[in-house]
Length: 176
Image (cartoon, rainbow, N blue to C red):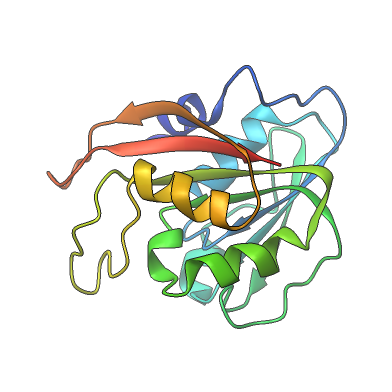
C-alpha cells in the first residue's frame, strides 16, 4: 500500500490535528502507516514508531512531513512502552498479533491522554491465517472488544481491498 492510500484510510472528520500532538504507532513495521499518520498531523508533532523488527525500523526516516519520528525496538505487547501519555495510538495490521485483546486494550488505554483515541486498521475477518494473521479482529469483533474495554465511540472510517486476496482491510477510530 502506498503512503497516500494509507493516509486516506486514516483521514476522517473525527480526527482533529490542528495542533502539535504525540502519537504512538504500535507494530509499525516498515512505517507505511507511520508516515501516513505524519501526513495528517500538525507540523512539530511526534510519532513513536514501535516494532520489534530492527530491520523494518531502519526503513523509517527520522521525520516525515515536518513530523518527528522516534523509533523504538520494543515488543509492543509485552515490552515497556517508552512514553507517558499520547494523544493517540495507531495500530495498523498489528492488533491481530495480540491474543488477549481486551486486557491489552485496557493496559494500552492507560497511555492515552484524556481525549485520546485509537486508530485501528485491520482485516475485516475473524478467520485466522496462521502466522500472518493469527488472532484476527473483524469490525464487529472490534466493536465488542472496545465496548468491553469501556470505549463507547467506535466508528468505521473506510475499507480498502486487500492485495493478498483475503478479507478487505478496514480503518476505525475509537474514543471514550
